[in-house]
Image 1 (cartoon, rainbow, N blue to C red):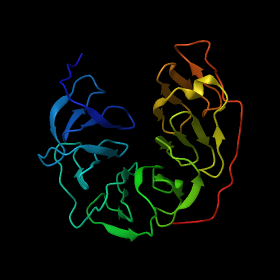
Image 2: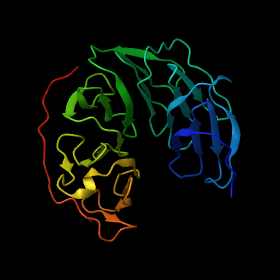
Image 3: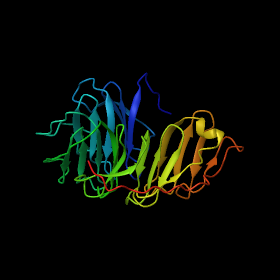
Image 4: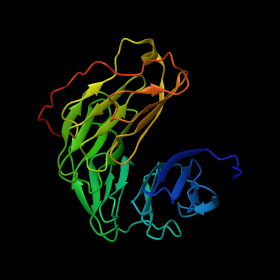
Length: 276
């Protein structure tokens, strides 16, 4: 059993096999594991030796390519499983929105307040996309090749891109505290403080949890799904962890057998054609 020091970790990523894991702290350090979490290297320098609070981590399927986005509007990349990190040349970040890497490590997507930086050669070179944005972007999640990318736009709802981030479509009128895009992009799972949302068509329509149960007033504090989001887990403050093994159609609470086990109401929403 590993012994953890007094460090606050606030970002995490894992390779598809689960062999490689990285945790990012609020002080710029990273913890790395290359043996399925059995042991950890706590002395990992992933922010150039500076104490920079880490916002989001990106990793390819193999674990070779890792990107660390910090709140100080800087990005650090590794191409050797976290052995060394360096900032990409020519990339200027006005606001650290979100960051993701494709499964094969070739496509990198960095979203800022009014632009995006993309790389199609594993971070060797970058090009920018300019937007007319209307708010602050929180984080991103994307499919294995970037064909579906999702983000929050502060005060303006949830948006999805279907063309590598060049254009965005409004997908839902809500601010999601957490969300995941499945490997091939069809399934998107999202949550706010009280409800879970599942889309089976890349964000065009959504199934929403029953708003009338007492359990929906208990805060959702974490959300995760596997590569195709067939298996979903989320936690509530008081009622424990919920699991689904059928893309969110039914849920079971492992700690409280009296808790609701399904979301009965399906409420599809139309998708406006507006872009930003």
